[in-house]
Image (cartoon, rainbow, N blue to C red; front, side):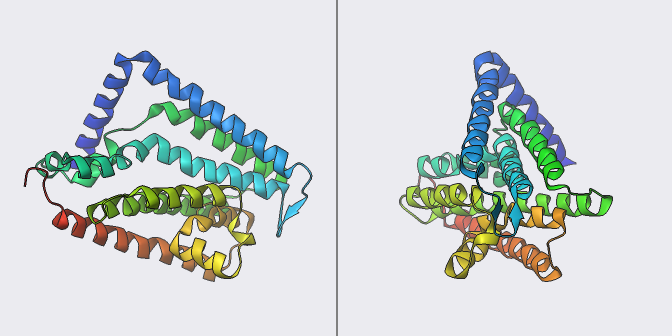
Length: 262
């Protein structure tokens, strides 16, 4: 209940701050909506003359694009701008203020900069997912929808963990720019290439080291009935492992952190 009240207070303050500058509130609606439209046009240009990618047809690929966009939209709406500020706060010493407050510093950092301007991306992504399911001729049932939502939820968690993990390395590194560039390159590649087409070292890299390759692949596989028990167990295990690694790196980083005033 304590953290729920803190979350409500942060959300209220965020809306109040945004509404002080109306363009700052409505601007992201236009920008993010335009970026989403451009992404769809690029997707259409690439896949207009391609019937299948691996074992997936056009419908499954539309589902994949919609699912990855939905995960990214949740990220942009809820926690990206807060988590993305971790590096700057470590370098400037502003992290001192978060450590002295009676709430988890990571919780405060995660939710203090929520961005309602990205809400249209959520709506557009859901529409694309529905269109993809219809194009693929998928018969929706309570079972496969709930399974899809479950894997979507844990992949959103994995996306969050990767962002926190990469930015937590700033506790130990002089510059975190290269790690963030690696993150951006991995996301951009996997956003346009489903994990089912990855083999060998590339599959190991994007399934186990930088697991962006499973983030939209597994939810889609669960919805179309193409997921084995072993794949499901692997996905859950990856999320569990990265949860532990992220928590460990963050806690040790907080202990390792030297105040700017020291």
